[in-house]
Length: 425
Image 1 (spheres, rainbow, N blue to C red):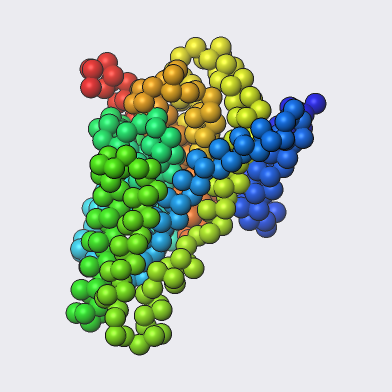
Image 2: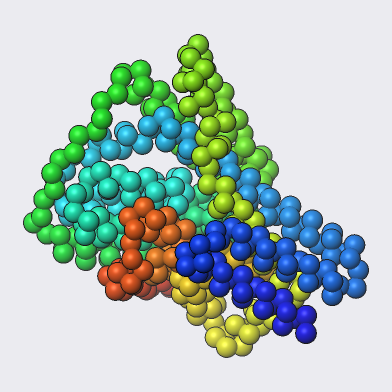
């Protein structure tokens, strides 16, 4: 009876998240309610409330490490944005050829999402395209490609996608190995769709767009914050390797150092100007509902794990597919419908490190499929949802125009990964 009840609450919570826009209820609210109710049901049916409470605190330790990592990363990126650091990228884009511009935007999105994160990169690059392209139809096609590039770029980096970050923090993968194993499959996911769309744009031009002028001092400050921020973000995996501390400690160090740098840069300026560029202001601009959404959904998944339902699901997948890569592919396709964060969290609960040790091919394959499978549907990834909001993309337009491209790329990425295994890479 309790099993049916907790699954019912979980499914209803997911439906509320999926229909966030029709319900006009932020998905963070649905996720938080779902997470708390799932744990309430688990504790009520538990033989010992104290034991269940200890399990909750254990899971909260793991969840908090992810949330503090995200909070630090998002604040650093907000600091770069508030100092117009990303204008440096805009100034470098001078081409008027649509196919060439598409390749530039896709390439920058792919590698920038690996350094920062796919959500932030998708927002920045979509905003950039809205300034470079006047035609709505062109912006929609570019936005669709940005979703694919951001998700595929984030999949091969421990910083780029929250699910890869979760696997890294959880000890399922190591930073250098995941980059080495997934870089080529991720490129395959991205390159086939961009070639098809570029062919559609062949011979077409756009009007050049001028970047607003800024003073030399403002440009210098923007460059300092951009290079310092990106440098610190890249340093986080190095810090983890050197100190063996959890990644969120390196991210908090990066945030503290950025705080010092921005304080020095704006020392002596008027209070109003300093406030605009401060870490305090950046923290206010961070997408807090997204942080709370992750908290709620990870709480819900951890309740299912403690209940033993994830282990049963693992056994069901094993008995149905009997193949690691079919299981990974199924989870990847499922991530187009269900948020990939709980899918990966569920997988971490379903398969322990004794079954699949650190850097096992299953974890690498899971990072690839769940990171890129969400591109097939506009609401299948955080990047897709953000781009949908910025460009007001219709769900059905994306399904008709972009879905098949994303699926072709998804299949190509899987093929390259399997070929690498056959070749012994």
